Amino acid sequence: MIALDLRGHGLSAHAGSYSFADYAADLLSLLDELRLTRVPVAGHSLGGYVALLAAARGDRIGGVLAVDVKSNWTAADAELAERARTGSQRVEDDRAKLVDRLARTLQSVELAPDELELLAERSIEPVEGGWRFRWDRRVLATEPVEPFAFLPDVRCPVRVMAGFDSEVMAPDAARRFAGAIPAAVCEVVDGAGHHVELEAPARVAERVRELASVDSL
Image (cartoon, rainbow, N blue to C red; front, side, top):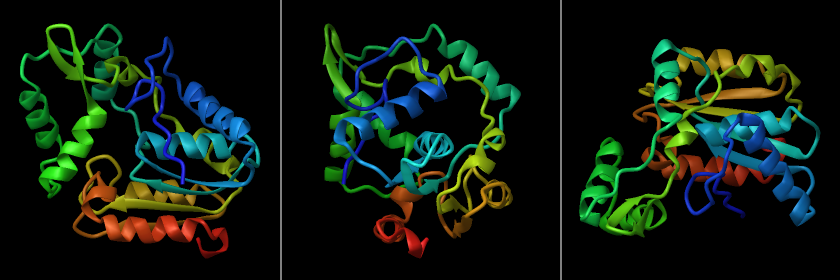
């Protein structure tokens, strides 16, 4: 299994551009570098969007598990994107403050202390004067989300998973999203919100294992 940190996220470097096309090109470039073909790809939120966009651009992707992917674009989204164009991460003198903020963003998820620390290690970095989140705030300055422009071109098997209580991909939106893909099925997870992979990890892990055998999607 290969875990890809998209540009500007996790341990990957910041970049000058964060278009969806950039992300998809990075994914396909990684497959080229590793000489992989017909690869199954699982992605959450932006990761799922990018996997599907890459799948629409050829036959390099053998199957996709797309977990709670945003499918609409609102005035609030546009406002956030505009603010993020010149945004930067605030430096805190105490790492614990950032760990607390990270925990609050995942308040619907029950994480053990060691699990939260693992996330913190990949999310927080030391800098001059203290600590800050690693991810580049400019990743939020995206172009409008328009998945229905390319979803009909995705020819590989796809499973769309969404949390029943998600504020990002409501059940009706998930079904419409999956319906636009020729070979997709939709699965709504009761009791989960946007972070399905953290709120229902066993179920998502099962789907990831199934993804290795594309016929079972």
